[in-house]
Length: 113
Image (cartoon, rainbow, N blue to C red):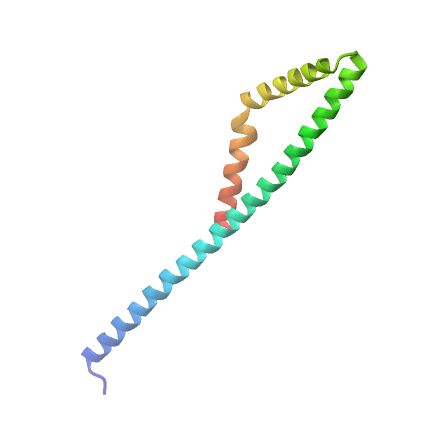
């Protein structure tokens, strides 16, 4: 029959294996969550980069068109700069609601799911 000492040694051995496996599982879950969050963020960064290039080219074209209509190309650039200045002020005043909160919610969502 098994002695109590042998049972305790087996219990300690199994507990050590359990702890080792549990920490390995935590590491793998952390890696999974972090790679998911990073890939989602990088996806958004690439899309934002493409959108920025589109809007820059669109803005230049629109500024040249407005300048053509007004007779001087620099008028169009001044008008577009004023428009973006107004939009920038609006975004700046509500940056927590428009920028910070959605980014934080996205990161938290990826780590909790």
